[in-house]
Image (cartoon, rainbow, N blue to C red):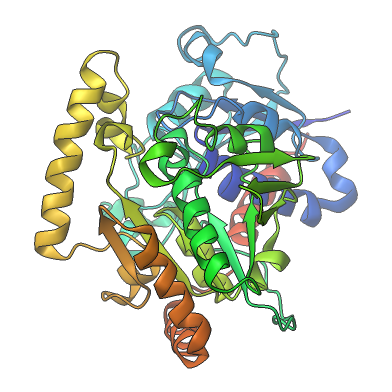
Length: 416
């Protein structure tokens, strides 16, 4: 029977996949037999980037015992009630891994638990939070000095992937396609990336393609974005047919098969890609950590579909009636600003403060991207140069372990 509750507050698909699950698995690993005395609960808050499957994904994690979906969040926040009337241990901890840090203040006060917040950029409510695990020292330095004793610098949780020393030993050139997990990205990403793969395949049928399926979507959901009857945007890029075959692959017309990788996490498989085509987001940080070259694409064919920005912009873009027009306006302004000021969005480029991997924005053309892939195929030294640049900006690892150790310290301090 559990004697200590860990309540994790989180929200979106990226946070569940790259923050919550890795941290829980590390806590479970470090506690070993002692994990039986702990109960891990996850309560999700609303997120504009939600796929609706976050609760199911979290429940599939062996170390997570119960999950409440975002639909019931405010009933818990305002009144302390969960939809299934959860009971709580006397001792516990609230761990913030996504959402609004203020929710941690409310939840910890209501339950009488200590609190830990993982802060990427800003640490808020410092007088009400017991401890902060921060991404870097600059987050701590922005806080008043009287709160510095509450801070532990843990590193970048998003880029903290396990080491995999096995390098690609296959003689076949292998391209990974990472169209994203959010609807706003998949709408353009699935047909666009499929068309690029088909173009390259027709030029060189020896090249292999695979898609690591995000844990918050299924192969069926992924394939639906390639269906012209469900996604009218498919016709913008291609007249190809995109069909799901046995939940294992996408058949592109009649001559190209793209493998679907449903294992999660699939770091070993990604490590074996020669190059990846991806969108902006956590993927670029993880690819950097794995040392995998990438081409980062930001297609802008459908301005009202680009609603995956964080914060208040993302919320406003997803409002009924106002959302689409607001999305068009803001995205048009962002694109203009990006092109004029050469703003970078891919994590390796941000860290390097220059473009070390191609980052392309605008009305991108299938043949241009395809020819770029073929150029890397024909010039492997260019890929080696990118790998060297990626290694120079790779973040130190261990963030998940450091956060898990902080949690365990609080468990040990509050044993009955």
